[in-house]
Image (cartoon, rainbow, N blue to C red; front, side):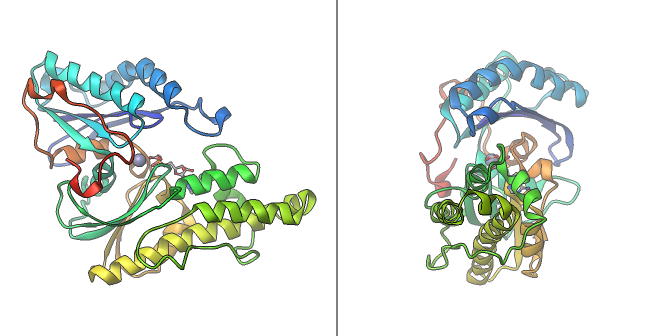
Length: 333
Ligand code: KG4
Ligand code: ZN
């Protein structure tokens, strides 16, 4: 039995899985206090993690009908993420593990997103290409095995895909997080109404979304307030199309480049209907975990922990966290 904690951003998460990847519990407490700021405020997220982690942990153990004494391994997200938020999970995991003299596994968050696909009942086996698109990261990876250290094929040079959804939603007067709201608004719009850049000129497998957001801003200005308001759904649909195309075109290139016809989708943006549909049309063998395993959760961290060397007590007491951008994915431990 593996217990995992995940506190890299604004969701306080704890989960229990078995060593063969069956989920016994997967508790996610979304803080819901960041909406008014239009984004996650690190120090506020950290303080909320402190308040919530005890209850979330208790919930995860109770739902799994287990106790701390029964666990074989305690796992935690070590990075990348918000340092102040990560510290709460890592300090809690160390304390739990040390008090019960259990081993601890330090997991890379992106390895977690990929390992969501390894969970029961239908684990998706390597090799495959993974597209992870969330509020914090956008990348393509060549996954050759279950462990960390997969090959990074491409990543965003500026904003993440989820961030592009959130910023676009904000410009269109929608709340945070903007992805689901923008998707809803886009349902009544014409995706061909406006042309937005998809960074097609970027040759390789890297992404860029900053120009897209700026293009939307200028388009709204050019239309004027009344006309932009009248055409909000068209703007949303066209903007969404541009993000979806940017992701799909590069996913297709990655499949072509690696010669692999297996593709896994992960991260919060994988919940997007038009993206799922577009990716399905690529014709590859596809794995899209259920939405609650695509967005941040601790079951995916527990899943990854099965393939990470566990540190025995007390070796992990010195363990530190790492921030977003601090460590290359390919060398993530
Ligand atoms: O993976 P996640 O829960 O947290 C991070 O690690 O960032 O992803 C959250 C992101 C947000 O930017 C949110 O707007 C986006 O995923 N998102 C969506 C949808 N649902 C969530 N984007 C587009 N369409 C959706 N349906
Ligand atoms: Zn994430």
